[in-house]
Picture 1 (cartoon, rainbow, N blue to C red):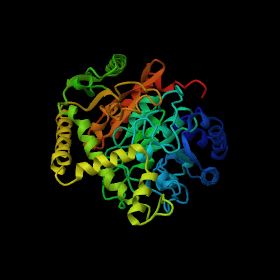
Picture 2: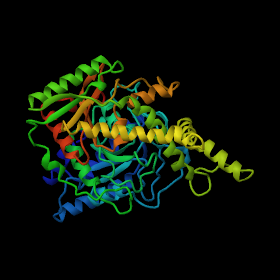
Picture 3: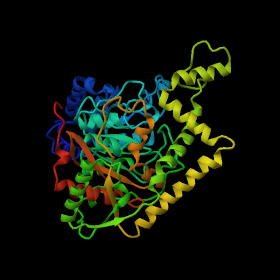
Picture 4: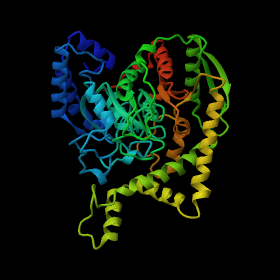
Length: 483
């Protein structure tokens, strides 16, 4: 059962080959047995899962149907879940039980999805390795000595290890796509505003976006269908009709114009990954796609701009965690200032503290214009590059990451080295574009991903291209040894 995709589970449940309760029990037992190797879960919600599974079976018995009805998933631990710990991977929120469900959680529950638990993540979604979590690092199931990527590494590791078929995740600078690439999954960051951020604990509000992580494009289409849609509770949610994503998966790629930016193939890219990307391009050409070289000239400025904007927004968003209203509070504070200082100093880990300090500096008097305002101007230039490119091509293709997953601890002493691994992913967040990573092969036994970017609200096109590619390749079917 654990090897089935979300689509196969939907068909199995519809054909009454097994019940949601049976499947849920199998996967909960598998998580209990195997997750100690991975540390991919922060919380297991066994009682809730079994209750939701029984309810889903009853709904099916009454004639209801739906691809997510009775399907087991997990939520990244920054989606608020009523009455269940929502920690954001931080000591600061270790004792926080959300009083309500995030919109994404509520929508998927209404569709009949079964929540198995909450997955581990980099603290407050800050990281590219899932090593900054207060609950410990997550291991990559392809090699337990390597990182699974971040910040959605718990969701990625759990799905890759076949502990469950799919999971929710979030992407602020590549945090869905990079873990997908490192663990041989398909991960989709939707257009900014496509999926509600209400109830999703914020890191950088203008960059954060929820999306699906699964083994196939078909599964991502199913999960995105349940997540997407306008939400009046979210001021950044966009009232745009949600298409039937699964219906467009089998569209021909004949004549599809794919742009390949020359800037992607610079000295920083591992040549073995470059070769796999070229192989992917050839595969898509066989399916009728037309390849064109393009340029994104301002890409070189994206990382410095991102690492001003994101920490600036984080310093503002995380100011609410002050030891007064909720979250960690220090013991026996001498006065209010001591309460603030010690609560935040004890509650936040080193990476979060680093980004708060950078952000506060960039927003301070005398530096706002020099740093934050200039970064926002660069952001506009990055967006303009994409708009010009999409006048010539339908989608853009390139590597998801410049290197395969690195060893645990290898970049801990050099945060900038880890930041540079986001070079291909952060531009989509700066511009608000949809992006997808799909499996493209292996380097030294570690997975590699190819990234696709599309114009606004063209998630269906990305899923279509990825699905057609996966019908003609088998990278996505490979399973890590031992799982």
